[in-house]
Image (cartoon, helix red, strand yellow):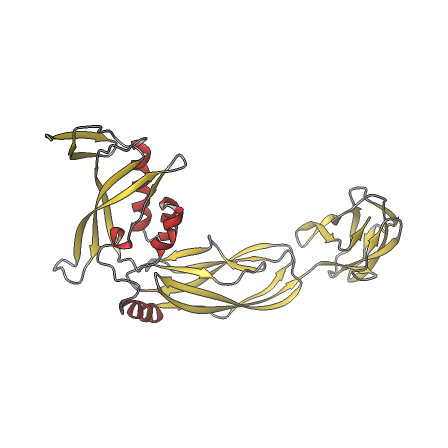
Length: 349
């Protein structure tokens, strides 16, 4: 069959293609394909491998994360092949990497990746990790141990343990934790503990490069009262090579207003009264009102929270109601808050 050459113009680049003249066409929505390819490689070059997962077929994401990538310095899309199937695309890319074997310290490859159209979008159909990371070591080779040893030597938590001091209940805070990482290849960092009080900012894991100098610790004191010391396990990973660190986070949460129910944790039944004691732990006196969304009758309603004292409110649940919370609203801010909430348990209609 006769071979012909086509010159195709797409945004940002030209591509020369040699292929069959029969049933040839561009992949569907080629502009979107080009945009997705460029965004994928931008994430790879900047070391944001987890962000790059957005462009991988869901069933191939584990394969993508299974190996140790080499540092990619640049990537440029250089070609797009015509195809008889508009939902599949062969994309050619030139990449430049670090190389100890080259005199310049750099090496270049041209690779071809298969992208497929699924769910109104383009995704990379990864067959083997070397398709994306030529020259990388297999996860089963001794290189994994070498990478792990390198991470051990070059990753440091520069502040550990972290003492956050006294925190006020109900606040959402961010603290910067200094780190040091000096290896050339990026690693991902995962928090290994689901915790409502402290966590690492970001998605399920974040990317660390030699340019990274901090982690951001998120602290939510909404549902905590008193001291805490939490060992936060962290996993630092590059493909199959992983090490573990433990970041110890300490502090003390001060609650300006606290509640206790009498009887404690007893069932709340319609028509039966019970007491809710409100303690003001501050030296500040404050007028207040109770908001129950009209689900309770308020039988005893003081109007003032006295300093460092406890106040009793007597309530009776109305028939057919099932409340989940009560809000106390103060006339003046107490530690910058004017609303404090109590959540009910064991409510019986």
